[in-house]
Amino acid sequence: MDKKINLEKLKEKMEKDQGLPLKKNATRLVFGVGNADSEVLFIGEGPGYWEDQKGEPFVGNAGKLLDNLLYSIKLPRQDVYITNVVHHRPPENRDPSPEEIAAYGKYLDEIIEIIKPKIIVTLGRFSMGKFLPGVKITAIHGEPRSVHFMERQITVIPMYHPAAALRSIQVMNQIKQDFLKIPEEIRKAKTNMEVEQMKLV
Image (cartoon, rainbow, N blue to C red; front, side, top):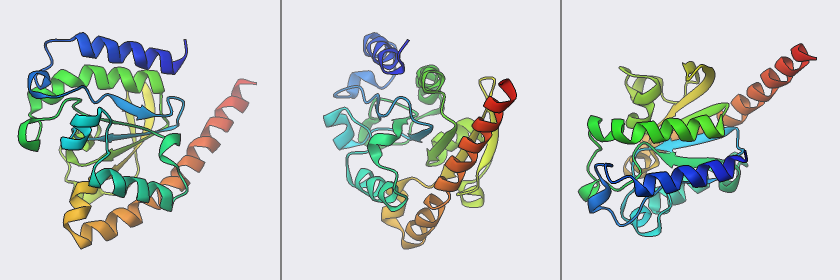
C-alpha cells in the first residue's frame, strides 16, 4: 500500500489514542511532514509553540534554520520527511520524560517502518538517544553510524538541534559543517542499494 496512505492511517490512530501522555495539554498532534518516499528521515525532539499551533514540525525559528541548512546542501524540505520523538508539545517546552518518549516511541517506530529511510538524521540528544544510547552529542555529532534497527541497517547521523545552534555561534558553525556530510551519505546509500539490486539480478 502507498506509504502516504499508511502514514495518514497511523496519524488517525494517534489522534484517537487518549493514552498519549502529552495530549491533554496540547493544541494539536504534530505528526510529520514531507516526502513519504524519501531516503532521508529527520527526527527532532518535540513540538514548540508554533508547531503546536500549526500541527507541523519545525515551523518556528529552529524550523527556518533547518530550511536554510537543507537549502545549503540543495536538499529541499519537501524532499525529506520530518518528525519528532514526541508528537504533542511538552508544557512550557520542557524536555520530554523517558516515559513520554517511550509512549510515543511505538508510533515513531511505525513511521520509520513505513518510510524505510536509508538515512536518519537525529536533531538533538533525545532523538539521538533512541539509536545511539549512552553517548554524548558533543562527542559524536556529524559522525555517521551504521545502526541495526528493526532488522535493517540504517545510517544514523547525529546532529545538534537547530534550536541549540540559535543559542551558540560555536554550535551554529558545527551544525553547518555537519550538514555538509549528508549528500555524501545519500550517495553512499544509493550506491549500496544499486549493488544490492545487482546481486539480486
